[in-house]
Image (cartoon, rainbow, N blue to C red):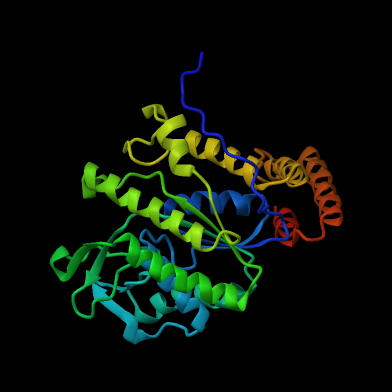
Length: 326
């Protein structure tokens, strides 16, 4: 007897390996996947603009990275004692202009240098609703708690988003023919928009991705994170306390399904091997000056060296330095 709707996901023909150059962009769900990719030693740039929810802010972020033009003071606004960029998440805001710009450009520059070498763009759409800054019509990636009357709230149409993203994907493929795109729709519900409007918004995003897949059948794949959450994990025990975001257990389950879909058996074996090493690195001894812990560190260091020699595409320098500093 089955007590949930099983979502069948075939193994993807686009496989992610530790040699893949990945860029993760989009909503907080993309950050969850990005964090796990980083934990497992994949090469990626994770949300260089911070969390972005709507398709236009994500596409404009890619466009700006392609120009390689750093941000300047004229692009900042000030509100509640902080300087903000409307293209960036609040994590980049600062009490000083230069502090804000420093946070922005220290993430922007390596991502701009990387974007033409990126082999996989992992993009998560969160909502089709956008907020236009009244002063210039710019779509805000984050409203930074600025009063709502300074924005115009708009729901983007399927055609608008498809047109925008066809141009973006075309630009990327023109410069990097080997690049591929993996789209997901965030399972996080935006109930502040209203339950019905949230459903309309998510439907628009699904139709957009379907249209893009038809336009670029060799380039685009879709991973059903939304469907996994809505059907297999529909019980509220799989939600966080706010009853909107997936719980850690749900995220872990979706990650497992993601791994089954996009990792070869060899890659999953490497992930399991590294997970044991990472567990040792995360160990916090009560008595670090004892002979037993020194022996533990020596054995762990040997494991890392063997791992690095066996997998030269994976850099372990940071972990070796961390272990030496303990």
